[in-house]
Length: 231
Image (cartoon, rainbow, N blue to C red; front, side, top):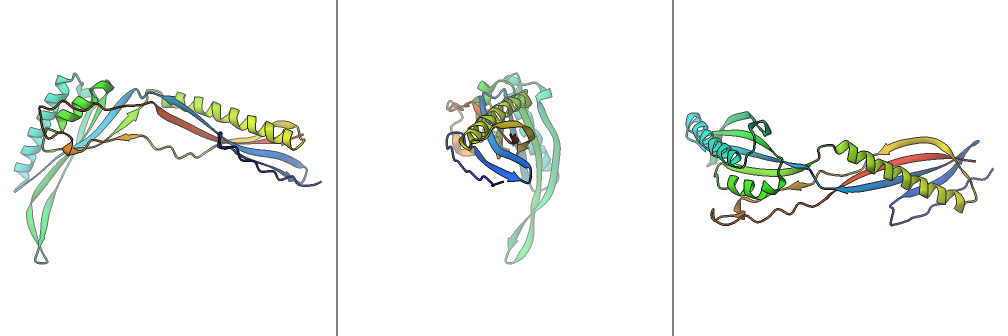
């Protein structure tokens, strides 16, 4: 029994496949990719409120004032407190190096804040208002889905269909007939969560209208490896 090794590359589908004979177990193994596009349902804005002062009390007072300004902003945008997580706060001493000596500069207090923004259209205004608070630094915003797993499942279904189509093509091209599935598994796919960030210098003029944040449909990808028996 001769081994059959065929390799085809189809750029449009980004699917790799090969046929192999191992003893009496003749099979074909393919990897297929599937992708769907969907508009995110909401955003998670990640930021911190931080201040450095001569002592811990003063630094904490600055952070508290900034937090109150932040909460006034979210209240004006009808963002509920249940969509604001600000439970983490920390402090540590600050030092400067002068003439190869460490000199105490003061205390820094930092409060981490995460805001769930249900109305995506408010993102530009929210970021604009928050960046007017000196103690606020926005680290980025994550685009989120209410049911990401359902979207992922749709991408998986496409990936399996793509794998089957290529396996069928491979079998026919090598004068073989496709049999039952011997193995199917998920293949790791590098699909980082899209991030959005705004620089502090974006709006130096508080009266300037904020630039719109152009949120597009996001790619949800899945990859599978499928092994079929050859009859």
